[in-house]
Amino acid sequence: MKRGNRYRIYPNKEQKVLMEKHFGSTRFVYNRLLNIKSTLYKKCRISISEFDLNNHLLVLKEIYPWLKEINAGALQQASRNLNKAFTNFFNFGFGYPQRKSKKDHHFSFQLPGE
Image 1: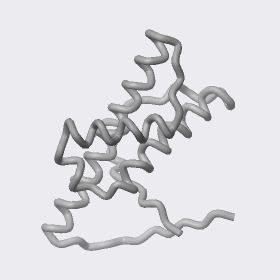
Image 2: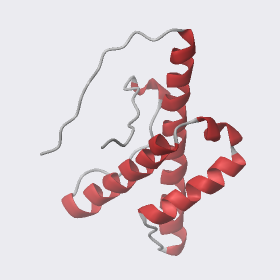
Image 3: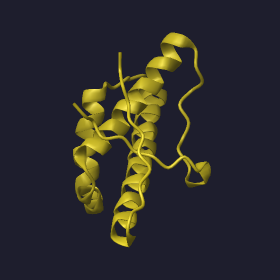
Image 4: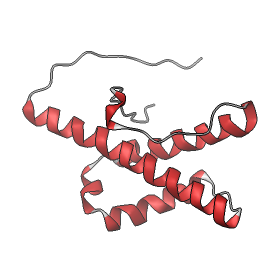
């Protein structure tokens, strides 16, 4: 059985800025990787794995140096979430993975735990 915890926090200004960076960066990475995966499949009929998506993370960090300020685990989790969304689409008939939006009002990011 998997367990999760939810916490209510009251961050100061510095912590709030760091959290907002994480929210935006994980959304940015998810959308970029979705675009890469969709384009490769539409143009070349190539499906790339989660491992390949994580390799693209390294390229994204070189192109966008501000991604280096974000916890690497949170960015890898965005890649894992995208891979899970595609698995659900192909295996269980869920909808095609959609881009994340700032207007969504579900600001969250995940950090892999023990």
